[in-house]
Structures are given as structure tokens and as C-alpha cells.
Figure 1 (tube, each protein chain N blue to C red):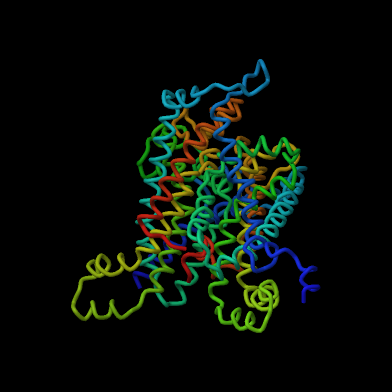
Figure 2: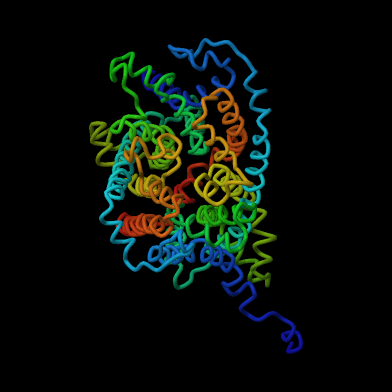
Length: 265
Length: 297
């Protein structure tokens, strides 16, 4: 019983900042600035929502985030379907080294690719463009997606491939017609995680696009020096909503996803 | 047969060759990871000269500057402190909570679900939430700390040179301790029960069981968690940017933030040098860790 109570207490502590944010979004402004803080007993006032929705840049930045996350997740998964399958089914000479370099790509501090990419993208005229950010986010998410897809393919028995191969099917045929239908679950988990990590990525989004395109985290961070906590809380709460909804679908696989397929539940 | 063959693709483009499978991935990694890496090296030997509006070759100047720059050493210290202290706190706290909620009771499933919530929040936005909570005048946390007398009435968190880094670290600990918890719970749940039962029968104390059985059996899971968390802690920049922007003064500059800040001040070569330094450190340490902790994928 003691164990259960303390476990719930831990849950509450970690949930509290999220609750605090959402409650700030629906509090009237004077309650946000009340001292002592009004944590549980406050009046509800939806005026903040009106203020937030009247911000001209708010909706465009939702759309920006959406296009970039959708684009980069699709591109990432498309690449990961094939390379993940190859890594799962084939042994080749430098396979270990290859996987190590994929993990090394995951280690790169994002600032140190953003600085050179700033120059590369400006040469290509891709600064401040959807394509530029979609490609950069894809590259950031590729190590995760490839290794995660590999781990899902590893769960499918190899005999399926071998039998089909003996029957004369080509490897592309085997993947497309036999293996992919079996790994749709893993595919969607990979897609959703890539989507989430593109949505949450901040530093590249800030450095490689500023004027035309603002993803939601970038847009929200502009509020850090403004005293309008009421509007900001609404904007932040709304930007979290799609993430929490997507989380519902992948909750079972989140550990596997975050460890790049290495720890299975 | 011969006729048929003349229409077929060259063997390098068929599904038997590795090329069509891996080429897109390799291309992406070359364009967005390897070329930037070499361009970074190039930049670290150049500097932008505003008067000439061009990058000028400066030899080792940026590297010499790096090792004589007090702010760089300060930011290196902050990065190391931040990485190691957060890692230890998250690991210990995570292990404690994992042991607490490792149970078949359905009630604990709810707690695990709640803990996944923090993991999908954009770090910049987690920073904004705590920016409100740590505000010097109206924030909840300073108010609570003042009411229990831990800090004085006039004290602040984020504007205090020695407390500011803790103000940043608390966000990281809040957001990523659940990451440790969930990984460790997954590890705990996958352990076989027989060794534990026989240890209990032999009358081993709970701490002994933890020390001699649980920890060794979890070592692979712990290694993966430490590796991934360590990487992300080292390259963290969102929280400091949102909460303190490196302030007060230069007290909370991390390597990434400092390099970014130099970049925005058009010291492109120097900024690239700092970021290259932090990249090389994590590549060496990370790969050494993978090697010695025998992390496998």
C-alpha cells in the first residue's frame, strides 16, 4: 500500500508541470500572476484562447510544423523501409562498422551540423524552405528510423524470406508483398516517432529558417521575453495536443523507439 | 535466355546487390552528416572578415583562440557538469522509481502511461513551462522555496550565477528521468524470476539481491540508457537557450550554446571550431563507451 501511494505521488509530481501549463491556459490573467499561486482553486476563463487565436502567426506556424513533420517522417520512413530490411537480413563485411557509423550520426551535436548546413543550404537556395528543413530533419531521424525498422524486421522469422526466395521471388517482391504487410505496426511506430521528433526539434529549425518558416517550438520560444503568459500557455498547450494524441498509438513501443530498437518491451 | 538477359538491369541495380537498399541512406548521411563535418573542419581554419565580406584563411588561429578563451573553458565546464550530474541524478532517481513501479498491478500501468507524457514534449517548450514556474516574481518554484525558507526573500533562481544551472537542470531531470524509468522498467520486466526466487529462499537481503542480481543482469539496458541520455545531455541547447540564454553573464553557456552564439555574432569560423570540438569529444567518448560497455544493436 505504501508502495502504491508513493508510486502515485511520483506520477503526480511528473504530471504536475503539464497540469500547471494547462491550468494556466484556462485561468484568467490575474490568477496566473497571483501570489501565493492559485494551483487548484482558480476561476475558468477562456479569454486567453481568443487572444491566442488572434495571433496572426499562430496558425501558419502550426501548418509549418505539420508540413515539415509530415514530409520528413515520410521521407525518413521510405528510406528506413529498405535500409532497415537490408541490415536485418544480410550480413556483409563492414556491417558492424556501418551500424556504428549510423549510431555515430545520432551523436552529432545539432549545432555542429547546423552551422555548415547553413552555408550548404544557402548555396542551394534552400534556407528558410520546407524542403531544406524536411531533409535536415530526415537526416536527424534516420539513425532512429533505420535501426528501429531493423529491430521490427528482426522480429519476423527469416524462414518466410528464405522459403519465398527458394520459390524464386525477388528480394524486392519479398519485402513488398510478404514482409511489409507483416511489419505495418512497426512501420507506423517508426513513422509516428519520426513525426514527433521532427515536431519537437528546435535548434536546426531556428538556425536554418527564421523569416518565412517558424515551427511551433520556435514560434513559442519567441514568447520567452514577453510577459503574456496567458497567451503563451494556450499556444503551448495546443502545440502539445497532437503530440499527446500520437503518443496514445505508440505508448507500448516508446522505450523501443527511444533506445533505437535496442531495448524491447 | 541470352535475349532476355540483354534487357535486364545491370546486376548492381538489382535487389541482389546492396546498392539499391543502402544507397539512399548513405547519400543522406554523406550530404547531411559527412560533408558538414568536413565543412566544419574547413570553417575552423577560416574566419569571416566583415570588411572584406569573405572567409579568410587564418591557419590555427581559431584553435589557439579556443584554448586561450576563458568563456570556452567555462562553457566546457558547464557542459561536463551538466552532463554528468544530470546523468547520475536521472540514473539513480530513475532506478529508484523503476523499482517502485515495477509491478503487475494494473494501477501501475497508469503511472507508466503518465510518465511517457513528458517524453514527447518539445524541449524548448518544456523550457517555457519551467520559465513560468521559475519566474523570479510570480513563479511557483521560487515561491515554494521561499515559503519553506530554502532561499531568501530577495533570491532568484535563473538570475543567480550559481543557481541558474540548477534551474536549467531541473527541467532536464523532470523531462528525462521518465526516460530512464521506462527503460529500466522494461529491463526489470524482462528479467527471469527464478534467480530471484532462489535468492529469496537462500535468505538474501533485498539490497544484496539488487547489488548481486538485478544490477548485473540489467547492465546491457543500463548501458544503452546511459549512452543515449549522455549523447543528448552533451548536445543539449534548447533548455539553456529558452531559460537563461547562457546568462547571467556567461554562467550557463554550454558548448553548443556558446558555439551557436558565436555563429550569430558572425564569428562563423570560431563558432564552427567550438562545435567541432564538442562533436569530436562526443564521437570519441561515445564510441569508446560503446566499445567498453559492449553495447550491441
